[in-house]
Length: 362
Image 1 (tube, rainbow, N blue to C red):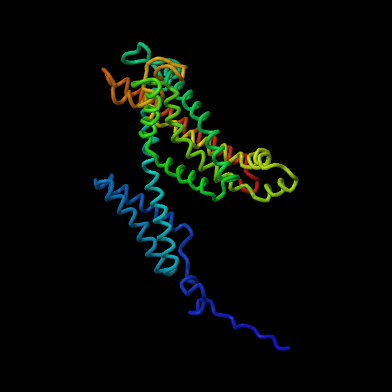
Image 2: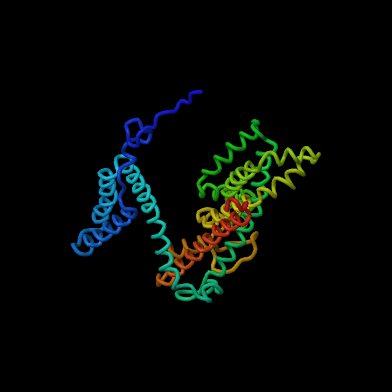
């Protein structure tokens, strides 16, 4: 019996599937970090030492990493590794460029808003306050009440709609129509939602109506499509075998959804709801149209104006009064508190996803 063997292909030969460039010498493992450090030094020297403006200095520093490093890699390692390093530098630069506005906003809000925070700022309203003093107690309660009412309206409607689309609608005409309308609602401008809620309540209560429940309805128009889309995605991730096993035991469909599907997708549903709340809690235009602003604390969603954090910050900046300094400072403080609330909600969503996800996927 004759055994035929395939001749070995020499490493680096033209017939090597990896190509000859892949087997050449390598740059030092930390060459990229050295190039980045050199770019920082050159940028600092050009900007601080020679007085060159910041943008040209950064461009020169980026050329050291984005052009110099791939060029050195081309000479030493070959074309493939050079192209790989160039793409890596480009993607990393895009990430840094995208992070600059975010970090700038966080730094600016924190720098201007942190000195305003005090026990008085959280426990006093703006009733009978002119100039210094006062706080956001009334705005915090207004934000909490309106957001809670929005969640009460939006979460049941959104989750029940997602259950219908996944478990009962399938690919039918009604389900496709609902999905199309949900996609359209996702792109509705916030001011349109506010005008819709205002027009709806003006029909029953007359022009000029301002009340917290109208703001909750306006925010629910923005929140419901987010809940529907996130809940639909989570329900579709539930393995179909679990449903089939439940049906094989004679369990009705409604009970299968209630006892099998929803508990399995609970972590994703809670995460989607939390992110949807964080999405609408900072909306200003709908609340400015439907709720307005007041200096007093109002706990009644069905009677009179209510203050909310985004509208409070907006009115403090747009109509600061005299002297304008204290009002502008309170606006920065309200913006910082609102930003912290949104960050806490996003962190809570991540923690829920982590602790309720399978151990092998953490």
